[in-house]
Image 1 (spheres, rainbow, N blue to C red):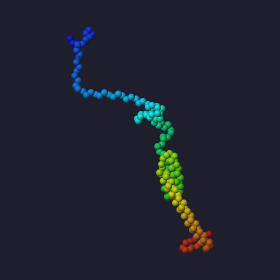
Image 2 (cartoon, rainbow, N blue to C red):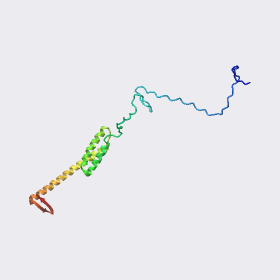
Image 3 (cartoon, helix red, strand yellow):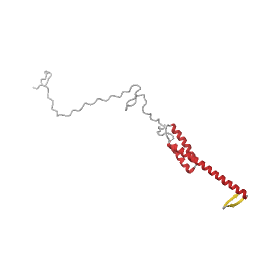
Image 4 (tube, rainbow, N blue to C red):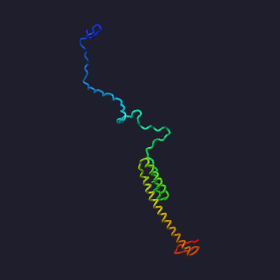
Amino acid sequence: MTDVPTPENPQQSTPPEQPAVPDQPQTPPQPPAPAYAQTPPYGEAPAYGQAPAYGQQGYPQAPVYGQPAPSTTYPGKTLGLVAFICSLAGLVTGISTLVGLILGIVALVQSKKAGQKNGFALAAIIIGGILLVLGIILLIIVIIALVAVGGHLADICQQYGSGVHEVGGVTYTCP
């Protein structure tokens, strides 16, 4: 008979043998599961990587439907570029120099209110100012030249009277 316990014989004389298992590497024990992040005490900032606790300032809200998304550009940048182009175009047109100067001032004021620098607006103001001063000087020279020519014409007409006269190879028509 075997030494298997039965209800009549509860004692067992020898334990049953376990089958032989070849040597296998033991797996290291698993580390404990990470605990949930606790909110820091009042007045302390959360640690790096933690989401802000409920009720604290977190990520910005998404824009509401129908409202424009917040802009990442600063005001006055595009206006400064337009002012710069207008100031440079003043070399050819003359009148756009004044437009470029005014737009450059407006763009620089907008940028300064936003706390940004605006190189194009500053360049537009400098170029526009220089070209405007040079244009005024040129206009004064042209007016002086026209007055001088007009004065010379008045002298000739006074000397020769009304009609068409040729003096020094130049034809003058006097009223």
